[in-house]
Length: 186
Image (cartoon, rainbow, N blue to C red; front, side):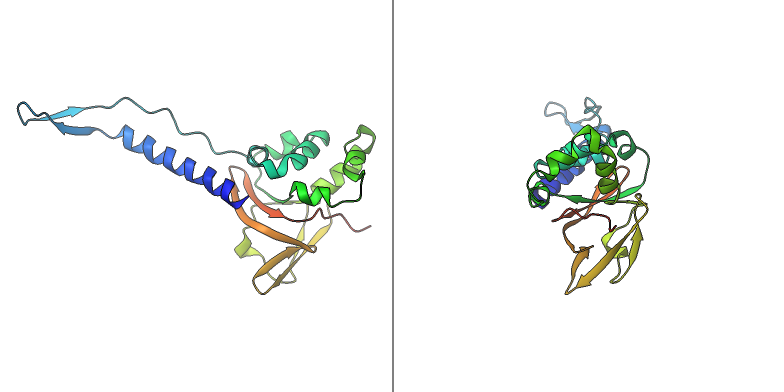
């Protein structure tokens, strides 16, 4: 997971560097007369625009269940909005750890309200970086309830779910990958 996001980040940085370098005027010496000739190189295609939270999650093979759930809940346009948002993104393995039939049940249209409640419990308004989190801190979710942050021996947990990758940047916020689906307390 970290490798995939690191590769994506590296590709964006390299693309940006190439784009900038290709836009600068290059000077070359010709072998025949040793004079300097100013030559403009062809413009490289523009670097790909930064991806929003939904696009970053969709690009991850480890988050296909989350993306399907976001679509079923009708939250795609919201999470593609300006934000900023902080998303605590459960992996496919986290969804698979739920009791059998839970995910299939939540994806049914008649359970859209429950699914929306669970998903919005994973979203905080604003871009909250890992360095901003403190042990015992409460952060209010878009769903309305609060998540509790725990930090022990440098490991960050959100409502008991381990943060396995932090500070994944998106154009409209930040993603922290977690190893469990967290549910609102009733």
